[in-house]
Image 1 (cartoon, rainbow, N blue to C red):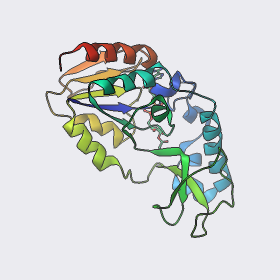
Image 2: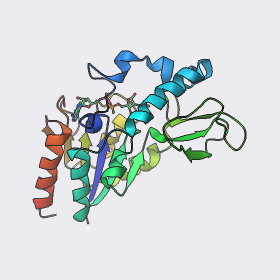
Image 3: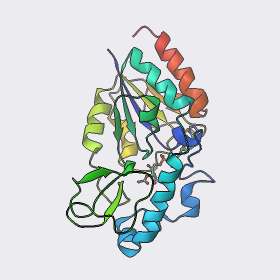
Length: 230
Ligand code: OAD
């Protein structure tokens, strides 16, 4: 079975109603990264950071997977599919994708501030100040903030290097190390890029660009890959 590795970003969830970060109506237009998405922000104002992620988590209960998430699950009938997502939503899982790796954490999870191995699934959308881990410290969102290490990057690089087909969907490729994954694919591997604002990726040889939304482009590419011989 050929291995397909898919790297997704906020754009794949846009048609579900979740705002991206860097588009003109993106989240970072309204909130400063330094205020809500760094460990320093957490130290400075826990209430603000908790509220920012509570709002995101609350919304997650109101949205559903779209045609892009759903089409990817179809590929599993013929390929060994691994999704590496920068998204903290759970829409790939809810669509039915089997292998989903979250590079930047998961909104529905929280973790201890003193022991990062203590990770819990939050009951409902609201994390409160005063919610403690079993070691007695405040629980924080299970999110990889700017400036923090990305624990899953090594297994993600390994997957990228093993890919027979690599697909990139809905990411501005602004944030590293996630953006570097495409450079770990083997030289002859077909790479597909689906994003209405996609640009050519310099140094990627076998590249096909779909300048379309995920809801349009992913079902089209999936149909094509399901009809291929491999
Ligand atoms: P960005 O907001 O940087 O980029 C979103 C991309 O999605 C852009 O390239 C858009 O053109 C594209 N897009 C918009 N609508 C789309 C649609 N309907 N279909 C397909 N593509 C669409 O989001 P990311 O690249 O995911 O990290 O951002 C990477 C990381 O930066 C995030 O994981 C987050 C953020 O700060 C953390 O918070 C740690």
